[in-house]
Length: 86
Image (tube, rainbow, N blue to C red; front, top):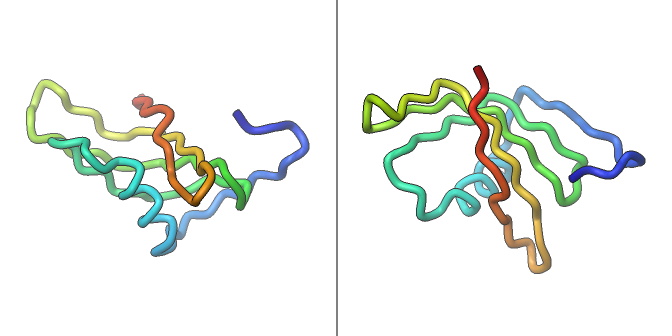
């Protein structure tokens, strides 16, 4: 998780680089479409994306989600969690 001494920044404009990180971390997840609307980051290794979600299967409907991604060595994003926002 994020350490106490690191400052978080909230951006409502998601950059192309942010979208690339999200896409690489979500590679292999099928049937869900994540559209980022905001990103919370410490400009380092921790990223939280707030996304609108569309699913192919009706009963798996999730409208909003928080996605936590950690950047590892070699700039490889690792998906740590997907949580529904109610």
